[in-house]
Image 1 (cartoon, rainbow over the protein chains, first blue to last red):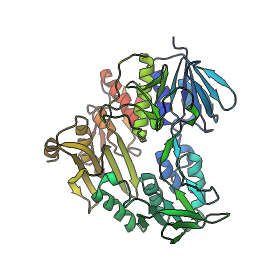
Image 2: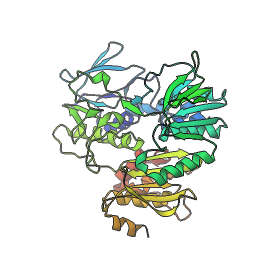
Image 3: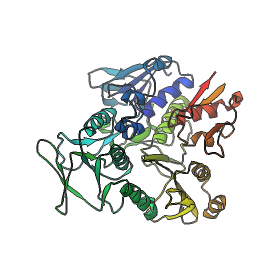
Image 4: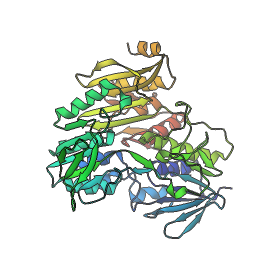
Length: 398
Length: 63
């Protein structure tokens, strides 16, 4: 009998989970635990609207305070979950409280990685949460030049937002190209030229040896000895799942929470979002996926599996989707690209920075990436779900 | 059920077009268009999914 469900993690996956539980008619007690002292908020705007000062921080909140009334939640915000006892069905909070549950959903997300040996000090920033964005936004008003370490999507969005604010940017990437090698050389070069044309000093294949400055950062030193002066250093080198609090809980932890096909990690315990490794039938594996849409889909999926009960044969299948906004360009990506995939532009051109590109692996369509081409993108994202042969995909592009 | 899209929020992710093509489309002018602002009740699960998945919360459903 389900009398009390606890959702640990009050970001997107956790929010969609509690919404789904109520939508599907669960009317028992429902507790939502979040370690930030804020209501659930949306992260994608942090690196754009919030950093650029277009939005006030509270515009990122998914719901206004009264918007939570209909969900009838016991919200425990600003308190961290410290341990999970799978056998006793209890969550232990950092304030000493113990909360018993009949079923639980874990959506504790991920946190930013930092550089090895990096000592926190004024002028050194990361961007993951709203507090990070507020602090960074404030400081950006007082600086002339920043160094962005890591040219993945977050780093590039931060670089673009800084340029939009007229701040000088040196962007440093250890890999030979910005974005991700899996995107393919043509796409990486297109994005790199976009940033260079906007005045970013982009250094690829450059390793950061040290962050310079004693009481406050003054730049970074590269492994070749060169010094890049900067008033602020912003590090965006990926994230790591928040699973430490689950050590000893009995859950299987291997780069995230290992789940079965239904999203269940232990009897009555489900996981969703950045922290979860739910087998994805479309992908054919159970990797972690750190995208907005995945958090939505898995939050919903976990809630539905929970209500269906243990032993329900459910299967998660989804074509991963994410997007990135940089300057006036929107990049949309669906599928799964790997280094070595053949990349073919089937509509528009990289020169005009408006195109649809398809990724070919053997005789299949593996992924699709578009820049400022939403209509073309939709067509192929839809097609991807059926895993079409390459010639079928090509004929759809005509 | 009445479906409304705030075009000032719509960012053309197109997830709704894929989820509920009976209700949403991207028109020839490139803007999102609500094909059926009062869809039949049978489409509610699809419309609800579109609302949940919209990255800019541009879709609202009344009734």
